Length: 264
Image (tube, rainbow, N blue to C red; front, side):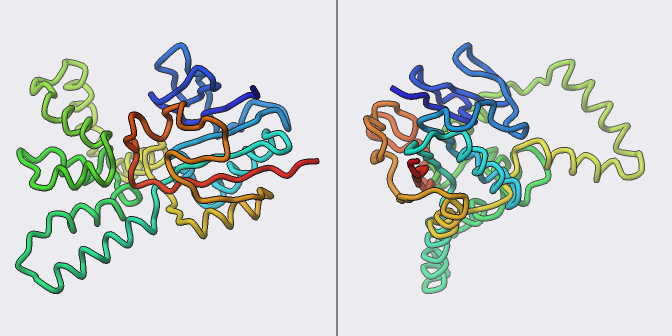
């Protein structure tokens, strides 16, 4: 078996992979900032996989990142990518728009949510953005629609919101007090927004099957294939439970795509 790398793994990792993220919350995860490059020599890895990572780079850095992946993959090795699927979200938006246009008396809850999927993670200027405000409602009328769109991560966020303790910690209160003082300084508001938007939460680009295929082709990958959470050119992919588990897709709004580095 070759070397498999799982970049930006978060809490989803597997012992057969080198699991890497900017912060390690588990002994199986290597802490590394991929903005500094992938810490492996040329042509040394059989597979580089990353899920919902590429969209956090702008166009120029995104291409650099994919070139880094290409560099470390061995000849005939593979890249596998999952990103939010712009086409899927846009088509859902248009379908909901048509539905409401035909009958404006229908509830627009699903339409409101799909708009957030389209723009909130690119436009937000604070942690959680409008999505977090949506999850903080006492009652969410279209919870099941949201979970079908974005998976159990949304359910987990909702549970965290419902179970959070109302009393803030002493440290939290101190931070808020300091922030209140700093907010009176000229330009602090804009500094805070800029700092937040550089911390990695914001999405800087969205992809569909055409744009991502063209990026992989530009970098040098061949045999580019749009696939599913369960299917892959990589042997036994489903057994790793990285894109799906127990038959359930972890991030249903994803585009899954693979490419191969040409052999020598």
